[in-house]
Structures are given as C-alpha cells and as structure tokens.
Amino acid sequence: GAVVSQHPSWVICKSGTSVKIECRSLDFQATTMFWYRQFPKQSLMLMATSNEGSKATYEQGVEKDKFLINHASLTLSTLTVTSAHPEDSSFYICSAREIGVGELFFGEGSRLTVL
Amino acid sequence: DQQVKQNSPSLSVQEGRISILNCDYTNSMFDYFLWYKKYPAEGPTFLISISSIKDKNEDGRFTVFLNKSAKHLSLHIVPSQPGDSAVYFCAATYSGGYQKVTFGTGTKLQVIP
Image (cartoon, rainbow over all chains, first blue to last red; front, side):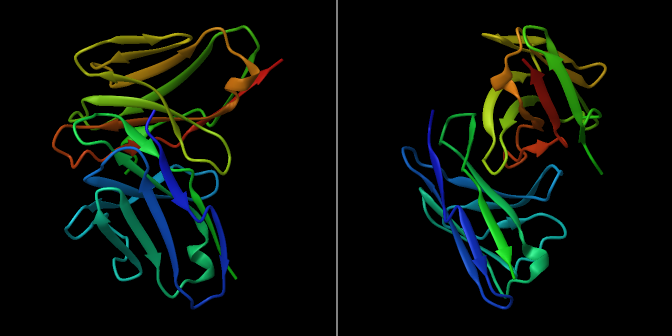
C-alpha cells in the first residue's frame, strides 16, 4: 500500500518552545491530509483537515493559533505546535488520501513530550 | 458527542477461535465504514472497509458485516491468531464530508495462544 511518513517520530521539548512535525506521502499525491491526536486509552481525535494550497479547516475546540498547519505541496503537510506546554504532550498522527482513491493511509505517528 | 461507539474496551479470545468486534454509529449520513488495527506507538493500519450499499465484505480472515437499520457493524476474525492482538478502531465517513473519518474509541483485542 501507499506510504505516509512522519518526522520526527519522537520529540522532547521544553515548555514554551515550538515543535514542527512533518507528514509526507512518499509514493502518491494527496490534496488533503488530516491531523489527529490520541490521548492515552482514547480514540483518535481529528484536529484539522489540511488542504494543499489553502488554509486548514480546524475542528471545534482546536486552537488554530496553537496548532499551525501548512500544506505546502501535494506530498507534504506540517503541524507546528507553538509555545508548547506539558498538556500538549500527546501522540500526533497524520493521514492522507491519494487523489482519486478512497483509502486513507496513516503515518507512523509522532510522540511529543513537553517538559 | 461520540458518533461512533465501540462499547467493549477489551476482548480476549483463544487462538483459533473467532473474534467479534462490534461498533455502533449514530449519524445516518455515514455511508462508508472502515476498520483499522493499531499497535502501541504506531499509526493505524487499514484492515477492511464496507460501503453502505453492501451488508458484508470479506478479505481473507477478516469479514465486516453492516446492519444499516440497526446502525451497527462488526468485524469477524477467523481464525484468530496471536499476531492479531492489537487495538481495533472502527471508523466512519460520508460523501461530501471533506472525507473526514470519525473514529470509535477502540477495542483492545488479546488473542491467547
């Protein structure tokens, strides 16, 4: 199947700093990518829909100024957690759908720990 | 508002037996359903899907059944293998919804050798 790669897979940062997570579709083009967050023992919660060349669409309750999403090309979307705080510590997962194909492919996830 | 629900947080099954994972949804607009398997600290892996125009889809050991009138779907794994031990997420989406996928809370399956 198609491959979606996230980087970094694991990051530790100090409170107040910003962290950027990349999501790349390696062998297909995706006009739309999705960012999820998973808390321990909880479901995947959709944070935002990232659209290539336009602004992201955020879900209710997600701070767009805190979680900056950029979808600069058909193969790359980035999530920047700005001024990170310990409560932002979580597992962040991206997904992408190939143009014209129904199936969603997920990245490996990125574990963020804010000290 | 949890639109996709998996009421059993965990399930234990003996190797070789059938595993049945259940999922209920409330949004009647959903017309495409998916099952994902997830290991700890990894992204979900797609398993099988079903469109609302069908009531059954089979792929090897995995079969998904859809009961639209009951807004219920289930995933059957036969025979269950120890490698199937993971968290299984039911998910749903609908045409025109930015292709957003709504996930259930997950069921942790343990297959006992």
